[in-house]
Amino acid sequence: MANRSTIRELLEAGAAERPALLASGREPLTYRGLRELVDRTVERLNAFGIGRGDRVAIVLPNGPEMAAAFLTVACAATTAPLNPAYRRQEFDFYLDDLGAKALIVEAGADNPAIAAARRRGVRILRLAVPEGGAAGAFELVAEAPEGRDPGERGLAESGDVALVLHTSGTTSRPKMVPLLHRNLCASADHIGATLHLAPDDRCLNIMPLFHIHGLVAALLSSLAAGGSVFLSPGFNALRLLAWIAEARPSWTTAVPTMYQAILGRASRRAEDFAAAGLRFLRSSSASLPPQVMAELEGLFGCPVIESYGMTEAAHQMTSNPLPPAPRKPGSVGREAGPLVRVVDARRRFADPGEEGEIVISGSNVTPGYVNNPEADAEAFFTAEGRRWFRTGDQGRFDAEGYLFITGRLKEMINRGGEKIAPLEVDTVLMDHPAVRQVVTFALPHPKLGEEVAAAVVLREGAEVGEGELRAFAAEHLADFKVPRRIVFLPEIPKGPTGKLQRIGLAERLGLVS
Image (cartoon, rainbow, N blue to C red; front, side, top):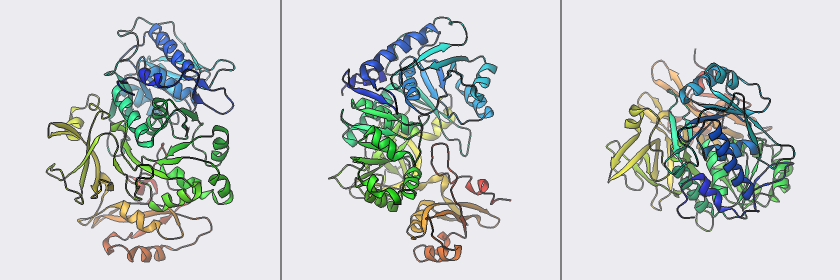
């Protein structure tokens, strides 16, 4: 485990003939095969004139080839996975912003990314799967003749950028987050240590692989432990049990909305879920309602481990531990990699019980945003001889070192000067027996500035009115925190990674004139 600071070194963890990547209906790709694929791909990219420091955009569907493309290309250049569902204008923006030297797409694909790349003179590389190839095996073919020699040939080094991802850009222009090989390897090792991952463990990946959660929590952490990953085509609650039966995984990781969708369809198959034999479920990337955690543990008969991560940290920052150590519903757990602190407005480190902004420092943290000194100045500060990153989340530690997130600073609702944490309102409304899912958000108000609103999805067959829900909330919340508007929906709009988005929800629901 020691001294692994590149993805290529990380892939040495697996025994040669053990499976690394698996997929439905395919032969497994062994660690030997994966390492050979890395070496061939590095050589091939170098022949195309692509080397260390060059950015390669990847637009592929979820599955073993997407996983293998990320792993192998990162060993030669800088990867930039993009959401295949983007529209033309979005690809125009991202390829421009990245300054991408090449774009990898499926053989035979015709999508808006290709047109955007051609307009910019970006090299197009077609990924072809050989007949009968193992899961993740591929060959790259360039549309144009082979290019000039790259400036930096060979395998990437510890300080090279392996991955560039954009922040969500909900309230501002998306920022580019560069993650070094050593950042990714540190985070993969942190997750493996937290979850006690071993070569016999197998993760069922249902997360998108253009997002840090799937790339690091599911893929890299498994391979760093010498384990394996079964790559699904993407989340599908109806197919989950079939994948579990085929893959025989020991764990999976997902966002809370995915787990809520599973629970919404689980009543008729409760015995099958109980027989799944998973060692644990992991939840991250958004707050997991304690009620959902309890239902999941009852359904699967295994512990649910809630963790806290973000792109700038190469994912994991804190996590609840596995049994027999206590895990606390509503908490994102203890430090699980980097140092984690809470600071007040003057950047003084807070004591347990005191609320403030969550900050982190450690080997998994990005060195800074790409070409954005203003964002760096806002996001980083130095204290006690260390460089700290401001997460933008608000929270507090309890006396046992467990972190409780109380809200996202940008999502706090300011109702006439009264500050309301949407998460607190969510938790109360989720206790109503008719409520399956809820997201509280700010609704513009002409006098107060903002008013409290909530979007609610009811359980199948349940009925409840807005007045009844407001009265229920009023039993547990101060009057100014009770939602003045409740909207009932069949489904709450989500972002591309399945996360519920509070900011801008009023506009998306047509509640702002």
